[in-house]
Structure formats: C-alpha cells, structure tokens
Image 1 (cartoon, one colour):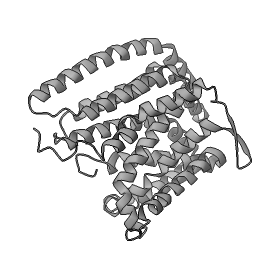
Image 2 (image 1 turned 135 degrees about the vertical axis):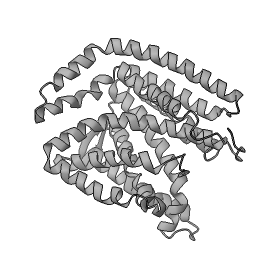
Image 3 (image 1 turned 180 degrees about the horizontal axis):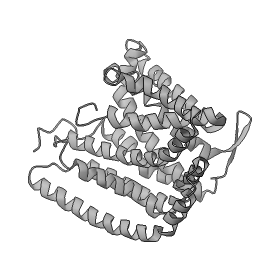
Image 4 (image 1 turned 90 degrees about the vertical axis):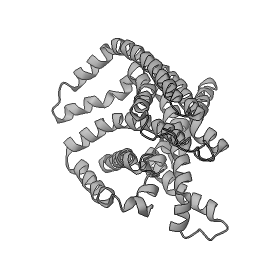
Length: 343
C-alpha cells in the first residue's frame, strides 16, 4: 500500500509549508480579526484618484492577482501547454466573444462562477492534502474521494449553513434579465429553508468526520502512513472556515478566505514554476535570477489585480475578469495532478 518514504514529509520544506500552506488559513484569520478589533475595516484609501476602502480593495486585488498567476503554469510551462493547446488558446477567445455577444452566456457565466469559486477553493485544500499523502509514499488513489468530500464539507459547508449564503445567492436575481423570473423566488426559498439545511449539514458533517477518522485509522493498520501535516492543514482550514463563513460578515469572510487561498496559490506556483520561469525569462545564468524572476512573475499578476479591483468598469472589463476567473478555476482542474505526477 505504501512505498518507500521520500526524504521529507513536506511539499517544499518545514518553514515554507507551515507559512504558505498549512497555517495560511489561521494566519489570515488572525489578520482579519486584528482588522476587526482595531476597527479599521473601513479605512479609506486613495489610489489613482479613486476613493476606496483600503482592506477590501487590497483583498480583491490580491484575489484577482492570484487568478492571473495560473497563466505562468498553463502558458509558460511548455510541457503543460503542449498537452492542451486548444484549451489554452481557442477556448478563452470563444468564451470572451460569447460573453460579450450574448447576454445569456454572460449572465450564466457570472452566476455560475460564484459557486465554481467555492468548489475550486475547496479542491485546493484537497490537493495539498493529497500532496502530503504522496510525500509519505501513500497510494495517490487511496482515500481520494473521501478527501474530496472532507474538503467540500470543511469549506463549502459553512457557506451554505452560515451568514455568507445570502451574498453567494445574490447573483441569482441576474437570471431575471434573461427571462428566469423565478430566480428571486429560488433565492428566498433557499434562505427561508437555510436553518433546516444547516441542521442537516452539521449532522452529516459530524457523521462524515467520524467515518473519515475511522476509515483512515483502519487504513493505517494496513500500511497507510498518516501525515500530521495533512491533519494540521484540515484543522487550520476547518477552524478558519467555520469562524469566517459561518459567523463573520461577508466582507470580513471574503478578506480572510480569499486572501489565504491566494497566498497558498502563489506559494505553490512559485515553488513549482520558479526554475522553469528562470529559463523562460533567460535568467537561469544570472546571479539575480531569483529576485528578477519573482519580479517578472508578480508584477503582471498584481497589475491585473489592481486594475480589476480599482479601474475595471463596463461590460467588457467585467467579462474579462470573469473570463480570467473561470479559466483559473478550469485550468487548475487539469494542470495540477498528483495522480499524473504533474506536481
């Protein structure tokens, strides 16, 4: 069941993993709580002549920046790009045209992307957990579906059962623009019955967690090697997710959850793609290879993030942001794979 244990149980290394992956949810929970306790959530900021709120704008810019980071793996990694050339070239063009030429495509895309985000964010934790399993030599297929369920329960469950559900359902009303007049009724129905759904989710989640622990305990008796880093990751995520999505305002929850997610993503992309990017930018022989490569990596990402958070206006800009968001979620589903040894 288990192969020889690799040199290190960490994905990158002790300090890197603990900061960027394992405790990132808790770190940003503390950041969010500090902003709340200091009562500076509505701190004003002027950028480019525009008056905005500092922390919500920074959180949105950071989130949008990490969306753009996917292209450094999908389009600048030759091995990945050659596997899916049409997905990386033709599909984005068709999607952008479709959303700008068809109101139906635009509305459905805008509504669906909200929940695609929830699923995608859940699967990022799932992916890190599988990496920790792989580092211990465990079978990459063992417990795969069980881990997916746990990731969804810990991330999406508090959204559906908590105060953030209302904001996640707001775009349903957009469907009325294209003839779905029952959309607002669906929204009201979901919120009205949320207490029942919450009770069901808490019950099922508790039973699922008990079975999850029991199942892995049984597997450990058969040779599965338990990763304490995977356990700590799920503890960190679960605590943060329940606290923020379940009880915080949407703005506070968005700042915490989306920021730690982006932080983790920058960490994994930089670790995975740094050497490749040094070659792509022809800096691999330079004594300043690392800082210059990091600059060329981060600058376009944050330029897009700041533009999207502060300056993007109008239908085309909105569709471009939605497109990058959707491509990020979609690409991530097939360019990172423990089973295919792509990570």
